[in-house]
Length: 60
Image (cartoon, rainbow, N blue to C red; front, side, top):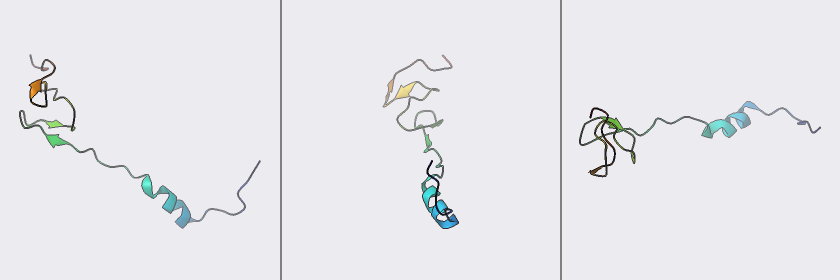
């Protein structure tokens, strides 16, 4: 079985892992209800998406 000839250094290891960081989701405020919603998704509070009702609201 192949085995690495040299140990991978800390700098090389950290350069490789530089893209592994987590990013926070881009939460926006819904203009109709003011509820926090992810972009391009239906607001569950009002049922609106792109200015029209798509689903029944949760409170109805």
